[in-house]
Each structure stands twice: as C-alpha cells, then as structure tokens.
Length: 110
Image 1: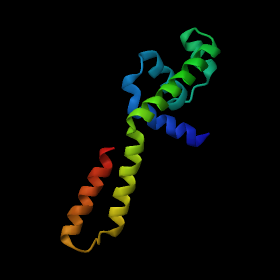
Image 2 (image 1 turned 180 degrees about the vertical axis):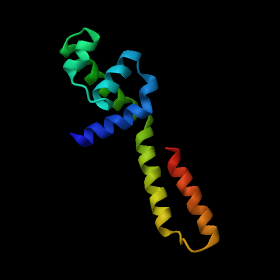
Image 3 (image 1 turned 90 degrees about the horizontal axis):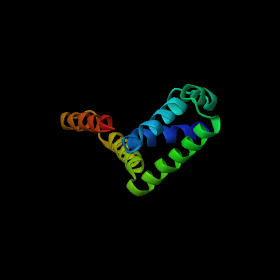
C-alpha cells in the first residue's frame, strides 16, 4: 500500500496540472492530507462512492499519462545515473569536486 501511495504521489506531482480542479483537490486531500473518503465526501457534500470513483478514475488517468509521457520513469532513471556517477568519481581531486557539485545540482532539479 505504501508503495502505491508513493507512486501515486509522484505521478500527482508530475501530472497534476493536467487534472481538473476537483480531481486535484480530491487527490490532494486523499493522498497528501490523508483524509478518508468519508471526510472528503462530507466536505464536498457528495457521497463516499462519488469520491471513491473520482479518485480511482484520476489514478487511472495519472497512470495513462505516465504510460504516454514517462516523466516519472525518466526521473527515476536520471536519479540512478546520478547516483552511479557520484559513486565512481573520485572525491579527492579538484575537477571531481566540481563534477560532484554539478551532479548534486542535477539531482536537486527533480
């Protein structure tokens, strides 16, 4: 469950601008603020089932966006490459220090 939540949070970070305001709000309340379906339903004056359906549809949309655009996958691969480069670059020479700083900056872009 935690793995799914983490993945959905990452997908939400990457693709939230493609969602409607209501979808964004439901996802933020459910996944980031950890509200229950019932609490969200009460807040919006809708049924718990309506919130559940909206959240599940939005999750599917996020997965569909990822399948087409691969932003999360590219992010993960980029972090892996940065980690590998950091491990093989010797830290004791001055040019390596600059390269390591640049890798750290690149890693922080995400």
